[in-house]
Length: 277
Length: 295
Image (cartoon, rainbow over all chains, first blue to last red; front, side, top):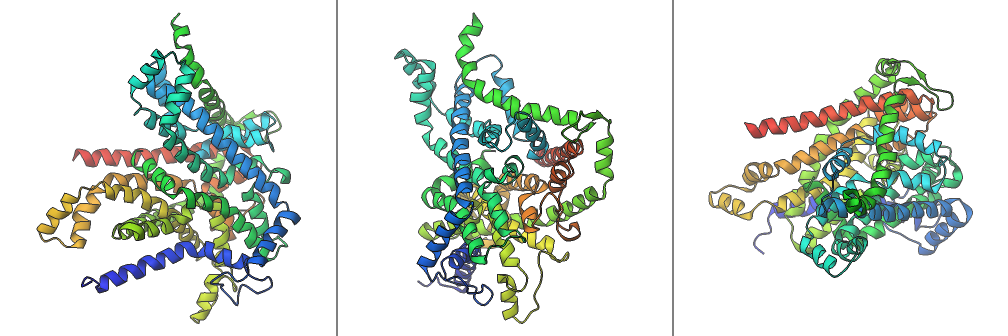
């Protein structure tokens, strides 16, 4: 223990302070929700939760007396359908692009990879106009379908499927498996880790998507959590601070739960997308 | 005959390619078409040549948004990377459980939706009773209206930005740190190099490619900043950009023209101008890298 120097102490102080800054806003939100209503926030930057029942009551209230529950349902459906679609469509294409030769393979893959460099800014308005012309504004398919052909998902899955030994594919074929069966029973199980990581990243991204729902789901019946949270927090909102903070906390809970369960996959997924890109 | 042989392959990529063509390629082409037309979304588009581009480039909002963007990028990208690098080195200096704890704590803001980060920070910045002003009050300082004072708005945005993105970049840099062979550090120690010298002469050069990625990616996403300033300023399509447009950014301006002013042609032209800028910046970055590698 002779190594405890000023530097080591300083290091811990800095690390703990930054951890506090990173965690504090969400911790503070929890404390405002789980406290008896009526206490002004100003006098008390609350440092710990004080009343579990008051918090649960506020959550119950917000689900029964406001439109929050419907928005929650819509956001969950939006995220789940997007995950299923992105994974299925992306893995079907990745299977072909990574393991087989066919005319046009290179050029098609090249075009999709170029898409990774095109900013959302240039596509969002024409995509909105197309969605509108299809009559898909304020519908679930309008939210989900335009985002399904994800170039990032294809890129990531191709990286993984390239590692599958061609012998395994051949062996399955000799056993009499059809093309789709090889995909379903051989390729998919082998890249389960990549699929899980991609599903989690897609969830976090879709749950946090603000811009697309803002323009496509502009009717209150189709509001996602992001828009409802915006309404609660708007200067014109007539809700109390307690209610607003409950709305904020509920929006944070699904990604936080995902993070607690899948922290390793999330962190590795982000690290991989950076170092392989 | 050969087409039949390849048919299964085409069938498997068909769902992806059809959706990609419909919701990516087609929108780009149609956006290009609209950018030369005056169109409010209802009547027949009317061809006006480069009119939209001239209107966008000549508008006061455009130059305001670009000025804001330049200041924003000049500060947020380098500061964000410095913060991320610092965090990564800090986490890397711990081992085992504590390294994990700090990494996860620093990463937490990344998993929160950006709309929520902006919303919660609005409460922290609130005048008088907001958390930050309460702390300033304790220190005997006057209350600041962070999100409505043109002198502080940009910095308030940058703080939120770094709070959100530092953890993301940290994780990428950490992965880069893990790839540096430990023999290099041992050799340096034998040569009598201290911690600081090791960082300057081994860590930073070895992190080159990773830092390049983080920098380029950070630059490209900063150029498209939208949710955070939009929500921090409580914007809507009727009114956006905050007090005296101090937090007006190009994508906000573009979205406002489309959905506030129903000028879809102008917005499409705006999108292309932005894309050209982004592609140019990316090309310059990669050009610089090749040039450095050649030397």
